[in-house]
Figure 1 (cartoon, rainbow, N blue to C red):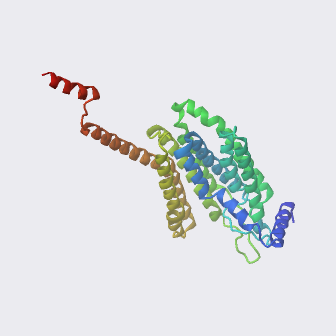
Figure 2 (cartoon, helix red, strand yellow):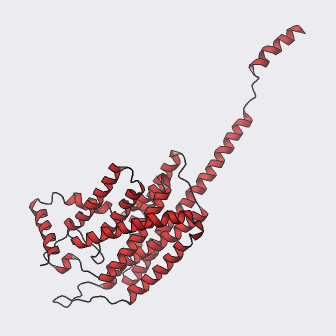
Figure 3 (cartoon, rainbow, N blue to C red):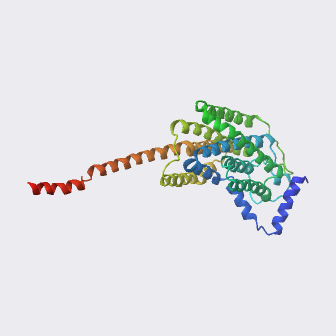
Length: 349
């Protein structure tokens, strides 16, 4: 048995020795670094706290996960439990193993926060610890090898460093914004053609069953390609046609986040699973997933900001109009000088 699998097996024996005392903790860490929580974090930052940092987080998220899927579907590394039946993971995982998507996402998102708020040392240390714990959690759970998580984290860090140079450059040259959706569309098309035409390993077990179905492994690639294209297009449209501000009253910020997160949860946890879960054909399911994830980022980055900016503008006009009516209808009160002078005049007459 190779060293990486021996390491996972040692962690598995430790889990068993302590009767799973840390299982829930590491499962929780793993979940918040990849699932819907990451999108919530990016949304709250983008909608209400720091728009530029939110933009960077969304873009880094799209790019890092797109590159991660390109590597996954290029190397086609089997999951640890496929390589050895002795490995018993705490949860199932889709797609190929190398690199770790959770490590990529954690390094990209928490790394973006480190880059954007690097002067706040305690906060940056906390974000770095979260990255390391996420990496270890994927080993502890038994779904990734050490090389999976290390390369995943390095990929996320490289995307953050590249974004730290590229995104401010685009801010200084808004006339080049169109390059982002144009390049995104070309790369997405090239990626989809590539994953359809490239060869995949076809290994069978003793009974003749296929160990890993490439079509099922490609589904996550479709989903992240949709997110990548969605955020590229939405980023451009929001800058050109919405350009909302986070310099708004606290009540507006809270409303944006509450209703936006509710929309995200309904979309991510109910609508998308119910539709894709009803489609049994793997290829059709992959394309539908692509469309759903494209629209998800299009909704979060462009459509929803367009909606709340429009509503806030209309509400602001109504408030201004109401205040104007109150001013017009208010009775004119004579000033104190007139009220004291007039009786004197009457007395003299």
